[in-house]
Length: 120
Image 1 (tube, rainbow, N blue to C red):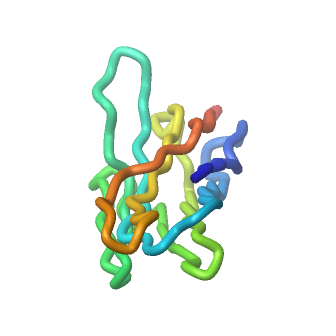
Image 2 (tube, rainbow, N blue to C red):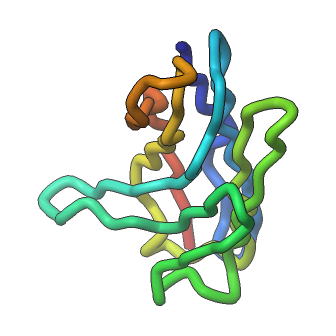
Image 3 (tube, rainbow, N blue to C red):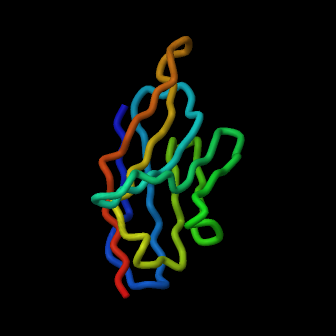
């Protein structure tokens, strides 16, 4: 299984970006898709997650500004980020909780990370 993350970049405060997280390979099921972000010297933060039933969870710091979604036919997750703030600057890492064998275990597969930089 390969996970490719894309969509980061430099944006001005108030702007928008959309991150994508696409898994390819032999995938039986995808339970959860989510994003963490990491700033040097700070703890990793769970930004958003969505389950196979569509249940979502957001960090308080992004509620109302970020929207997570998924396309199961493409094994892809999306993170729409609106009204970005300088404090959103971080490396964003996506993960997908996948089952790759019918009776096998679930495990997390991670993207390579993408830099999001928000300037004033």
